[in-house]
Length: 130
Image (tube, rainbow, N blue to C red; front, side, top):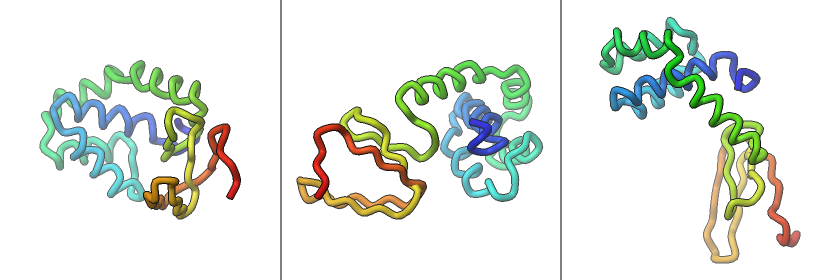
């Protein structure tokens, strides 16, 4: 996870610690809005304060590594499914679809899917080239 972003692990922990106080999405949105400014512990602590978390509880959660093992298991699970980066999407439980640029796909059911983000496409077995 650190290869994706040097502060990805602590950011994931901060989001989980915020979730303990019912503010996962507030922290999630704040992290993504400010990722270019920094995601180190000092920045994350500031974001936690900004969204109104109980700072004693938040700091204890980070310092104790309360969610570190859970996050490590999530990373291992993802790797076992072939996930090597984010964002990742799958189709019917098949190999991951990882996007690196804008992709527009029209499915057999005439659904149009558009993705802006990183792309590596591994088509599920049985798919034919058009």
